[in-house]
Amino acid sequence: MRKQKPVKESFVSMTELVLPNDTNTLNNLMGGRMMHLMDIAAAVSAQRHSNRIVVTASVDNVSFREGIRLGSVVTLEAQVTRAFSSSMEVHIDVWAEDIPSGTKVKSNEAFFTFVAVDQSGRPIDVPDALPETPEEVRLFDGALQRRQLRLVLAGRMQPSDATELKALFDL
Image 1 (cartoon, rainbow, N blue to C red):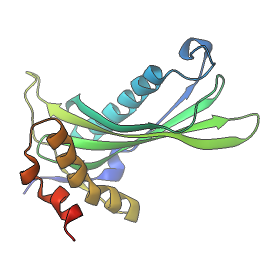
Image 2: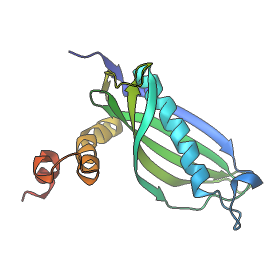
Image 3: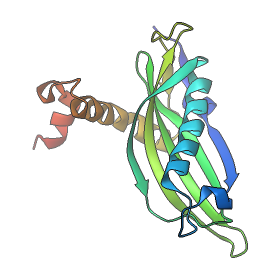
Image 4: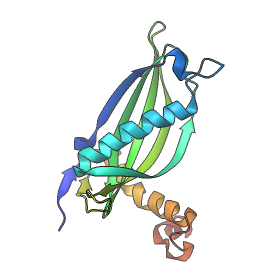
């Protein structure tokens, strides 16, 4: 049996201030800059879970709900949702805060997948993720479906083999 590690131990909170160099011509945070910040927060979370070097394997379902204005404070919260043999799914929430007005909105959300590797770059086993709260359990339970969807879309799994996805559509 593989070692287990509570998902709360992978939690990362990262805060950034949106400066002029981070914005587009509309004075909103550039999407590429946001993706960069999300990748860093998610990688730290995966490293905390695995205690290994990690590489980004995939990014999916990045939603840009709200523009983030110049001068806003951005808080990224990342946590491993589930671990497979050498890969880990990480969920990221992004919050934008306008301090003068006192408003805070969820602006972005995404799932990243990382693979833990050894010093030679070969995949290496990671601990199982142990969810404890209802939200952690909800994300853990959905991770296998999201993983199968990623693999099918990448051509690495046949749709007929995606049993968790098929179960979604069986009436």
